[in-house]
Length: 139
Image (tube, helix red, strand yellow):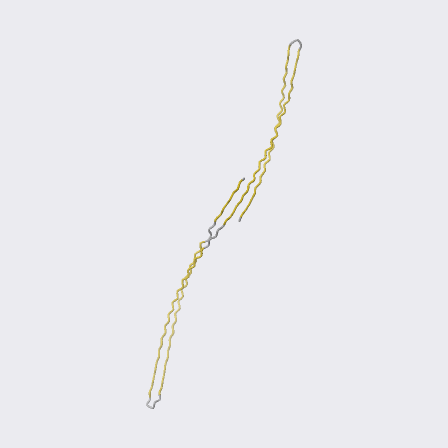
């Protein structure tokens, strides 16, 4: 992001000075006749002074943002499986003299399954490495 602001200020001052001076000089000469000489001098002096002051200010503001995001994910999965199998087999065989065969078979099956799941998740976030640059230009 960049912000640019410009300030312009102008000051105008005017000074007017007027000086009025009057000189009166009188000369009296005494010789044979009376002579009176009078000088009247008026001196007018005028100063006109104009003062112009201009400010130009430029304000530049620059933002540089850097985001560094680090994701560390750790998955730990533990599987515990237990199998218990029990087989019970019973064979009963009976033989009779007349050759009649009796066959009895007993099949007992026991199945036990144990399932244990362990899930561990580690989430580490390193967020926001921010860099701000401010630039001022004053003229």
